[in-house]
Length: 218
Image (cartoon, rainbow, N blue to C red):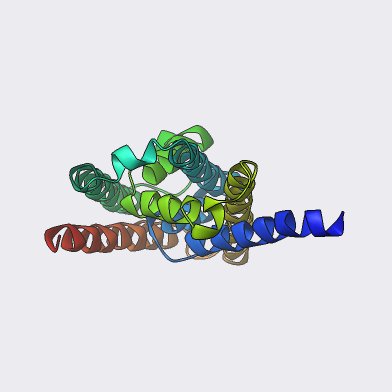
């Protein structure tokens, strides 16, 4: 029985580590999770990460069914790259505009609809689904040689453990960003809000520039 369980445990452990490896690197999703947690609290940021995990789950299903090959063509991946750049530029504009409005508005204004948990969830899913990096990751993760001759159950086990790893990172990162907010409570107020919006807008511009450069380089 133990010999039968060890391959499943190895699959789960490998998938979990893969989930962390795709989730923790600095990127637009992690930047926006942090901004939302600092601005609105834990659930505002966590919901965005949950949406991103949902987007990844969709890619996992598509790739495991073989449909992911349709999206892996050069033309489709470039189209996704353009969508990703456009989304990043839109987010950068929204955050920079938010910084300007925060500077002109007294602290304590009502939360923006864009920062709601539902909006965060939808944005996270959209960012994951339009990211060529996420597609490439799932093609690599689900197309590993050790999965080629593995039982059919290995595919959902791998996908599920990867998603669990990514979700656990969402819990940790959202908690850390919320802790930062708690430590700065009662601090500089409006200046803090302006700084967070400016920093996130600048980051989104940086990510958009990097994605556009990779597209231009072919």
